[in-house]
Length: 298
Image (cartoon, rainbow, N blue to C red; front, side, top):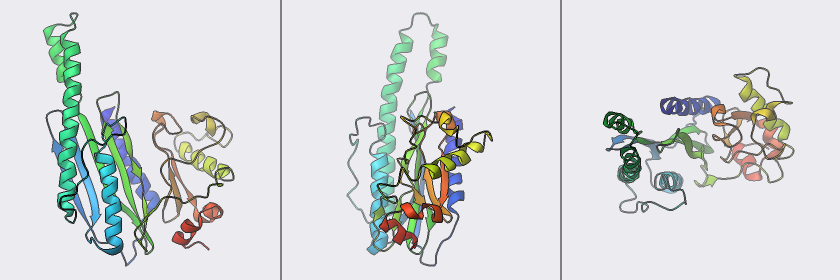
């Protein structure tokens, strides 16, 4: 199950990129990418982080936003109460390599320490079981799962006006299975570098129900052509008949606004991460003024 889920993460990322297309403008933000694969006694961490080279102006503002995302993910791995597990980096913030390496070191140390505690608890339980032979105990402990965190932060789509990054991570903390977390596909305005948090108006949910349902029908129809607007809610976990917006902010692509729901958000784990793209002409009436200006939709 663990290896399947890791493949699913890659597939989800590829699907999102396929939806986004590739329409880089001449005024692209120059970036550099850092990759690390690190293993300790009980845990593994991989990092792929793409950051703007320049620390000034718009590029610098976007860079800071991306480092905040990195900090927000890696400094809270397994923190069920939302408590920071190590300090934010502040020693030499102008060096991308130093920033990424700091989070790599802290993440692997913290993850391995927590995984070691988990192993000791499991070992204590197994070793005290009088119904198991010594050989069985040895085999069970040898199969104790390693903890894993795969962090991804990379440019996904860029135009002259905005840039979208991909923030989808895989995490496995020794349970029944791992899962996809992260911050989705954050969009940054290239006029001043701020992160665009709101694409849809507050009153857009009700009038967009038919569009959301149509998108979900399209998603689920990939595996079951009997899905339609009348029965798609049978595939979903909803408090009522209303399909909610996803927790991740929708992001712009070449063909429209992309909506991605996280695992368990509206459907069973086995249903994956429902996603679809609504064409700009269809979603245009429901956009905030900021989003319409960003997308050049009058």
